[in-house]
Image (cartoon, rainbow over all chains, first blue to last red; front, side, top):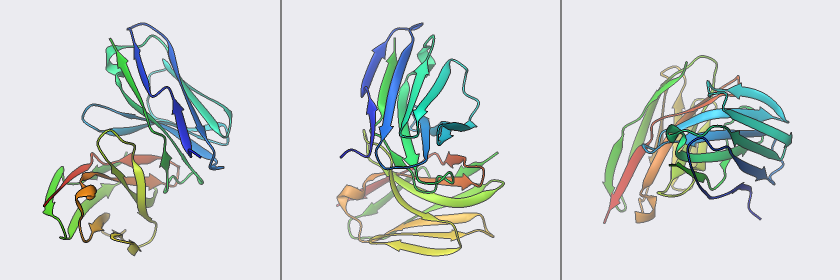
Length: 113
Length: 109
């Protein structure tokens, strides 16, 4: 019954590794997002996809590559992890591209050591 | 680009009313949304305004004045469980959402 789910919930890894975070929504929404929330709780949009098409790419290093195999899934792959990538990553979805009403997943806490 | 300003902290007592203001600057404004986030949790959607005026949802209301680039979230009959961070977010017609830095609300008995 979970509306927006993410896996894993916690991810601890070393610098230089490559990791992926998966996101699925069962709300039938057309638009999905990735956000990064740092230790000061600032919430920044990274990407948004509408029906598998990238519509927002917010000056994110190209080590971050989103992939949307279908409109219910938006995965995030991160190459060559750096200490500064440590944060909580939230996936979200909304019915429309306007993003006025977004539903967030539980978050993935990434720790890079 | 987009920018938003909201107070960093607000404190109130149980049963009181509190207003969290948000001013914004953006091009292509589409609407203003509000989210609540408890420590360790995910942001949860509270309300949005696309047009000027007041939207009421139970104890929470949100207001927008597009001409003043200003909105607020009003929380009535405060409860301890309302202690959380509250974010305003401006949405553009290009589909971009920019969140404010958040307001930490502390409700005291």
